[in-house]
Length: 277
Image 1 (cartoon, rainbow, N blue to C red):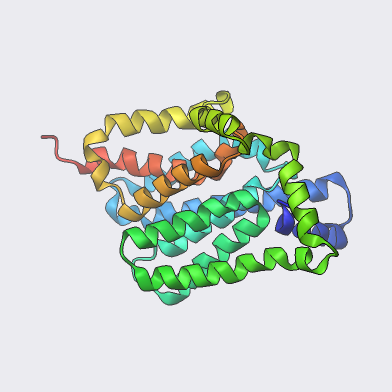
Image 2 (cartoon, rainbow, N blue to C red):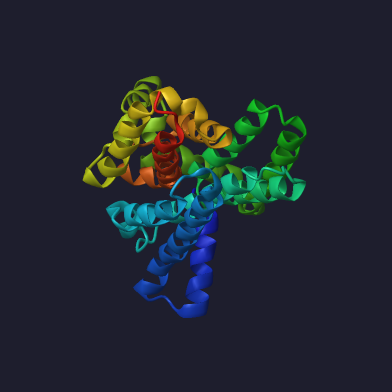
């Protein structure tokens, strides 16, 4: 119901390499490596506007490899690392200053694959579409929406092929213990109120969150100088998950961590670039 593409990839790994535990754990490691490469690419692309640009990548790598949640989840057979890599990849393609149509299509494909990996991946397609609409890139938004819709429609293949497929799917969705807090006004309201807990669940989450909160406060007068697309996409991501989340488990911070890390770098860079006055 929820992890379709992740399960398909797991089946491929089992077929190719066997069903030993380390084979399935290696899926997270593969996407952790991809994620590190993506973050490094973003930081390197920002060197021209960052003073002492050569120092930012080592600093971010220290934050990455000292983050217990990232390291732990890189050896877990769960879809969150795959989701984070696909979602951040979609952002990187949208962040192209030349606004090429192929980048929009690529971003839409990655956002759609994130949705197929886990239903929580819908936050990346919501954030992508919201960002394009915010910047009045209506043609790009239409392209993004059509491609995302096409990719996401493959989610229904097994539902439509199975006997009584939709009824079975709805029964699973409605009765899954993990989704019960998303139904009913009271439980959903409690999820909305306690949403910030996701970022401060335990010391694993607190470290990166506190650094970001401190820099947001310290640079509050310069927030408008942050890259506009990063700012809007990150906010859309934050609020979309707030609305759809069924649980405030700390492991879901992983979906936001690549954005938290590049925001930390961008916020830190604002101080040297700003006038002392």
